[in-house]
Image 1 (tube, rainbow, N blue to C red):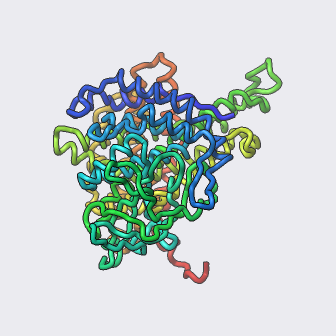
Image 2: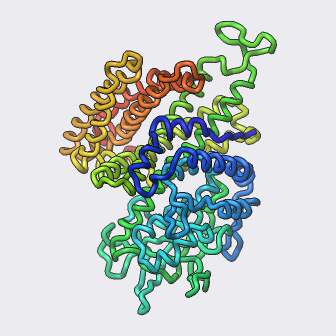
Length: 593
């Protein structure tokens, strides 16, 4: 049966020993008083809530799913509404939100760690507050004072939830093809008409109101992405006193029949002259929506990170219990008819692969969260700008590299279970199904790769990448004379040098033919992922080496050694395929496929 224990010790290792967040917060006036004791207490309580309230609903929610009634209303699975009430009563939606709107004002790093545990226990449930938090961020950045006063306190408290309505039946990533219309009204509002599909949390019974953020075109809008505006379209139009008022002309026409995340209501939403209000400036809706989209991409990475943790816990426990054959080097459990399968090298490969990507991914996610905190609250303007540059560079890596690894890890966990992993009884197959969507939504991983290489690297002539390269060189120089660190530092230094050369080559090739960038982008992003993970594993190994007699740190070093020996070498093949160019892909005429 599925099981989960919050990995508090490893979370504390990353937060306090690798990132040293307590000292980092001292340079941020808003968070200067936040210390380790408070962080650990919040995460301990959060872990209990997730394990005791959310986790038990994960499998039942998957089996029951959401149900749409003929009137368009949607019922979430049994227990979800009560869990939402407990979630909001405990104040969890407000963890990192602005105190001006009822939030607790804690750092993004604490919120991110909480997100990991929530996703580990119930990804489908976590999407409801996740989308709400994204809508909150968009309105916080671009809403008017009146809009903020009307919507943000209710969204922070969890009384109201939010969505992001971009995709239409004929267009997904290419929002320039968007057709939804917004007709201006004399009172300053707009009539929104159109159909949106794949809308996560689009309709449900958890909250008193649902605040849809909708992309649509004004009548005189220019074509393409330069003619898109953003609108607030609530399910119920708020009364003057802030309570939900008249039902708006927005309806859930159907729920998607999906492979996974059954307990989240993925809806087709129809807007039939619904009342809406513009967010930000006309024809600049993407600027406002990107606040939500970038946050969502980081959030999707956290979804896979959470799934990895639970899948690893389940498969590691199973490998210690499942008896099958004898060890190749002799009997290891003479009191039993066979040895547990964890004695077999390839089972260990599958478990260590999961663990290396999981623990490296956790360090990456928490680091990016800390960079967000620095961008928003650090006293030094230069630090704020540099932090934002790194967040921009790393966001597609968190989204794509982590979700690719998350799906691979879920499949490996299923493989550890063997035939028992293919049946529903053990529960591991749900994690494979749920993990698959994370590679697709919020911009497919191929789109993330194109964004990384085309915009984040080539777009500024490699400036952001060079800043990260300087961080790597500094770490290599700092630890280069430490013999104990050589087994970790040398692979990082070697990869970084080869990667720098590859980046220059691809830039020159793409300058002459953009298809060269498109052909190399997916391989390139995975290489970048390994460069970043290598950097972080060096930092984690450095901490672990200072505690040679402690089992926790011994395990950390063992996983680090596995990563550099068995996973990082994948980059050699990726560099070769990235250099192969566009010709092998583009030579065949389309009619011959």
